[in-house]
Length: 206
Image (tube, rainbow, N blue to C red; front, side, top):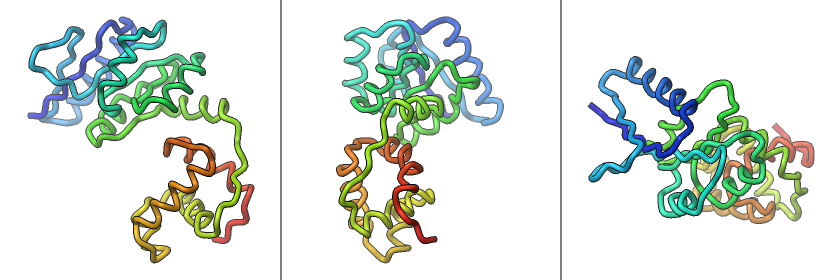
């Protein structure tokens, strides 16, 4: 049996109930899977996920936890109105972010990302960041970089792009890094958010 440990200190009771309801639903569809939720630190227990409630206030201790723990092990709860905080978390942290104003708490997606050591960002957060971050017209992209950008827009990953363009994965990664540097981006999520806007800037031949 796999036991998923969640640590949620000082979380709002309403959000805690929602979190528990979502967690309780997963074992019903996944035999052999169970979870333990702690609200106080348990000696000897290393949580798979720590949930921090930033919806009302933040403290230095909370940010210290973010800085001292791998991002995929941290989930921060925020409200949609906290746009400055959201932008700060997106750009300066690697934690997962869940907006409590969404209709559904996508805890299953959060857990899957944490187990894969990936960051989860809820759909509403992506919309908020896109609205807050003005589009910056890219400059001096090479033909190769534009082609990589086009294939990223089609949802292809580095391996698929490497095969299609007959280039090494190292070369594709280098192109992607150069694209992000020219656009002033630091996160893959930011790149995904503005790719659709970039379509209108270049002629794309399919």
